Image (tube, rainbow, N blue to C red):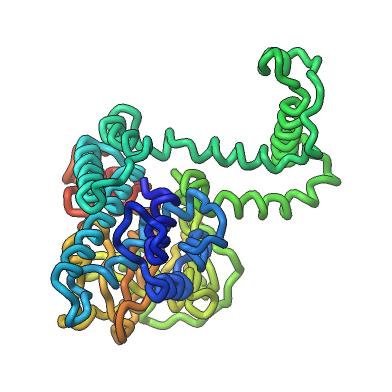
Amino acid sequence: MIGEGYFEELVAADDGDSDVFIDKVSKAELKKLHNNIKVTVRPNYRQGPPKNLGSRGHGKLKADQWKTCIEFDIPVFVARFWSRETAPQGQESETTFRRDRIYRTVMDLAVAVRWGTSYRTSEHHSRMFDWNMKAYLEGLLELYPNIQLRPNHHTALHVGPTLPQLGPSPGWWMYPFERIIGILQKIKTNNKMGKRSEHRICALLTWKYSTGELEETMLRTFYAGANLKALLQSERCPVVLKAAVSLLQKKWDQDKQTGTMGEVHNLGNIDIKRLDDGKKVLPTKVWEVVLENCGSRSKAISSGELRLHKRVMIAGRMFASEAQSRRDAEIFFQHPNSRQLVPGLIIGIYSFENGDEKTFILSVKARKPPPSQIPNPFTRYPDFNAELWSTEFESEVLRIPVRQLIYHSEGLPWAQHVLVLKPIKLVSISTKASKLFDKTYWAITGDLSKVVYVTLEVHEFCS
């Protein structure tokens, strides 16, 4: 939808090498984009774009990198430098109008991707995807009448009607198959195509005039790896090999936690795991009120044990305190005094254990709203779900249970003492049920800035 060819040609316009794109991304602006990528704070599992995006040296981007680009990096960059709200004083009105039209076109695409890649689907999702995708294509044709639309643009117009028929797109998109192709491409063949295979199955699977030996080698290698994984995780695994299971499991889990594959593997995961034994702390009377508000059944804090942890795994994602990892400590959470999601910083992770009961609690500092005089181009696109917030924090430290709406965030500096932040759309845990809908088919309303609780323990925020 926003292919490498278009992006490279837009950058090349600064050198006069483009016959289609008359708008220039100057070298100074490209340098600002690279700086934005460097200072963006996102969780460790989130794969960002290369720091030299737009240059010829970074090679081909992966699908996860393009997804991150259009979900955050490119729209935020265009909003910051090309929207009418941030236009420099003295700039010609015609230039301001055209650049703002580019901003609106990019945002149409970004919002369409949010609706189209949701882990929930409905007729409403379908309509919103179609509307935004058509707006994006109309914007392209208006800005660049000589542009040659690609087959992907035509294909995208069929995604909307497909969503109610086939369900959420992560269930049928081709990323897992592309991942397998990448694995197969790494198999060493010594640059030899081989001879015709006599193996009966390979002979059936290959064209009669093809060699077959290469395909057999790749097939055998792939199955050998799959069988090894199955053996190491089964009860039949020899004792000698079990010593290597923990090391290999760490590598496999790391692959499952990153990018699109990580999102798929975490579907349905509602586990909360501590990653260290923690340090025993002496509780105060304040904690009795905290635990009661968090749903603890304990009558007194003295009957259990309170521990301070460095990290905790929530629904397959690692959250950490500020002292351990700033990237994994930046979150969005539901403020206790409202149903609004607000950004904050984890400063402490606690667990309270009393027999079989175990409660995890986060100590969080919430961020303050930004100054009212700061121009905000994101108010025109609430569905994009990015907002401006202050770099300063509220004085009160909030203690919230992990079984509520908690999401990692990604963000970067916008202006002096101001950040642009956006919650990362992933599955989270919630034990609350909704009486607003009698069907779990609906997961959101038309306003993506509001949270709707569905009658599922595992649900998704914002799309």
